[in-house]
Amino acid sequence: MQFFVDTADIAEITDLAATGMVDGVTTNPSLILKSGRDIIEVTREICAIVPGPVSAEVAATEFEAMVAEGRALAEIADNIAIKVPLTWDGLKACRVFADEGRMVNVTLCFSATQALLAAKAGAAFISPFIGRLDDIGLDGMDLIGEIRTIYDNYGFATKILAASIRTPNHVRDAAMLGADVGTMPPSVLRALAKHPLTDKGLETFLADWAKTGQTIKAAGKAAR
Image (cartoon, rainbow, N blue to C red; front, top):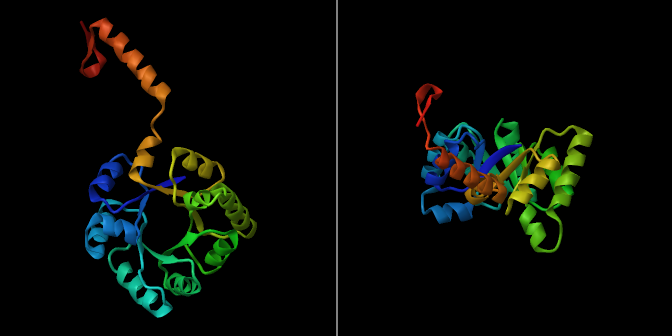
């Protein structure tokens, strides 16, 4: 499973990318607003930090305007994935971009039939929103499983990009169901490494090590 970080915060992206755990970045209008930056400027910086796909979303809702905005975003860098909403106009724009050889991330997916349409439109990524389905009493993981089955049945190359991830359990469950990518806030990505038993074990080891009175030097030599 690939990990994308869902933010437009340059400091966060730089810090996490240094771990080698970040395969891409997703942004949206809300994240651009939160960054307080110009969309072109901040997206260009992100693309320079992360060599993988960087999703930049159009703001237009009508087909022709979507195409114009998407082409403008694609000029930022070669690793841009143009993000469009799952509407008829968005699907039409997706087809245009796909035919031009551009990566497209179709977002705001809430049903398997929507995901089927996106794949037929040539989307590189489909973004089902797990957390938002959970919010209305449904199980977002059911959608991941349904999309996986449909895509495997017909050999679609569109990658399932699990979005609206809220917890490490969301990441685990989406990975078990075969999602190709999980995009998550920096806090969730960091939380994947956390476990209380890890902390407890480390505390014990450090306490015991302190009792040895040793230090570790170069070439693996220990001295008292």
